[in-house]
Length: 156
Image (cartoon, rainbow, N blue to C red; front, side, top):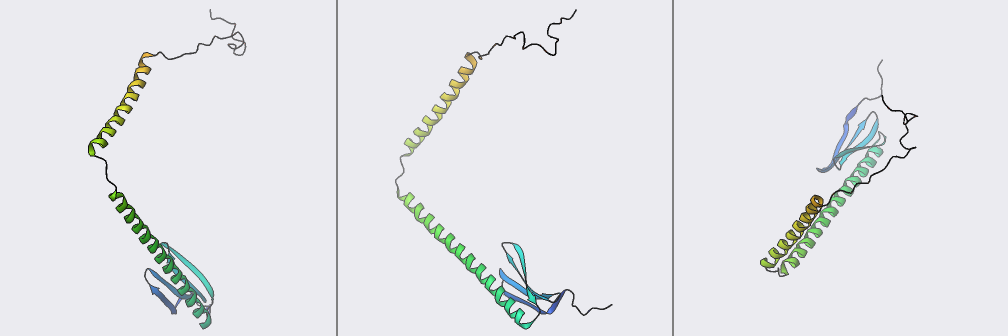
């Protein structure tokens, strides 16, 4: 039994809009106008309506708006990245203008810090070796040692 309903994509109504990476496609599938685009590495799809010239024009306009928004958003991120890079460059230049302390002072500070850490480790090891561990001896009471009435029994 043959049906009049079209199956799959109708290539007569397929149209690519935009240029990569901001490109999308309008097509007709199973009698419905659909749009498809990639955003953030994921494919997105939307159905617009039944196949007609007006719906196809509306789908084209909708897809162009989506792609334009993506491109504007991408340009905005690029501008922010460029602004951040220029701020980092300015900050780096300001840091470069500060005079560095002499190398001898820096090395002395690091050596003193290393000796402080080594002294702390030595104190910890000395204390662990020389001081006995503190044990708490607990005497068993008459009630504590009983286990189901077998506490009073002795082995013969």
